[in-house]
Length: 189
Image (cartoon, rainbow, N blue to C red; front, top):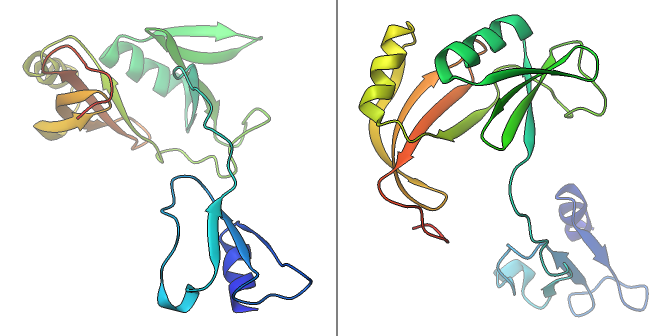
């Protein structure tokens, strides 16, 4: 029963063989990113394996939704400070467009369906990539009266080493602006 509770509480599927749950008959289905087989002493004897199909081939990010306190304040900040284009679509819905991506904006308490389970202003930590040298980014932030929280610092981006600067948007989201030290390479570092 303890194993059943553990598996249920973690969202994992469990099954028994011959209607009994014994250490030799339980098969636990884990996501591919979990190391298998599990060798913890209290679970030894259980058969662990992944039942997941081969991964999807995700190509990129189209958009994400930012839940904000004020659409007007958010669009003002991201357009002035980061040069994003304010886009209106489907009536009066707002988005911030940059590159081949966009942030759709939902105002807290007035979200569009479907929405995140807990849409909360200030809960995002994101990294944006620019070709502008980080020293110029920092000068621009100062000119816009945006306080630098950290940086410049070296970090590891999705496809290689980056230089970054961190600051907060009006909702308290942590925004990291970075540039790659050289041309990004597939697979990162």
